[in-house]
Length: 420
Image: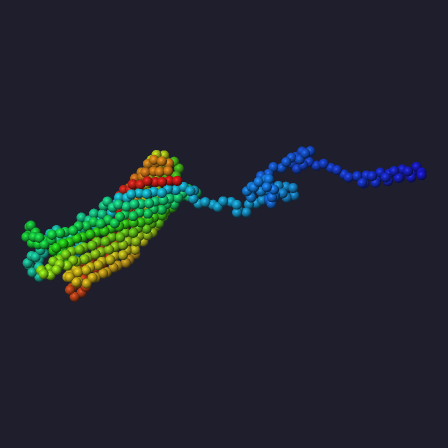
């Protein structure tokens, strides 16, 4: 073999040896220097990784790997807690009430009398169509009716909202207050005139002023009953509750129910042997008031004591029912006459409240308050009786004639608050 051929063969064998050898290269681990790779830290196993050794973790913390890179799985909202409207804080209050209701005053239980400016004082009554005096009578009034010191209760509760506002509801009820008088021993001779005494109901004659009377010569009673209750709900706005002085506007709804009744019961004794009979004149009213209110609450707050005042202005719809019933008005067996009137009108009002609170415990306070409420356009039973006589051949003419007036109540409250 020639020298040239030997060199060529050696080059061919060397080339073949180079082609069969594997190539190796070294690259740095992601995030580390050349050499051993650093461990990758993460909050939990990758999504779908079932190895229990890693433990459970919230879905929003699970990781996945894509192309060697770590990414977070977007949350679908199902694992987030539902939004809460209430903080969990609130209060419950119970109070004893002692209120005074506006009374009927000196309302006359009869029509004006011709030629007599004050028929509530005793005067001589003559036999019809003659100048012969028959009795000394007077028309009764309601001046002695007393609706003060009416007891009641009020329960209130409230919840705090997460954004600082709050919701409060309250309901109160007063007992049925009954007041009136009974006049006994009628028919005895008057000391000054020497004539039998009596109580009388004065009436118009077909709407005209006159001196016509229905006489009770044995007994007379006038009984007045009144009951009031109501409820309200208010939304209080977190306007300024920093520092010692807090101011919170409010808006709410209110309902008030006022039911009253006036009963007049008189006994007349005709000449013996005719039996006496009892006359009934009864008037009832119901006021259903409902509507909205706005107001402001101002409080001076310290750790031990608190003082507060609240003013609310009401615009209410008043559905009023007035009823008048009579029985045996002119004689025994005079048929029952029942009349009524139902109407709805707007009624305004103001509710003023002041209080002082002593914090005896972080979760309990003692409270004393004063309340004044004024309502306009209220119907009451003493104003709705139209005393009239239309003749013996017609039904009794004492019927309903609805009127409206102002009403107010005021009084004190004692209670306790329980907070959480």
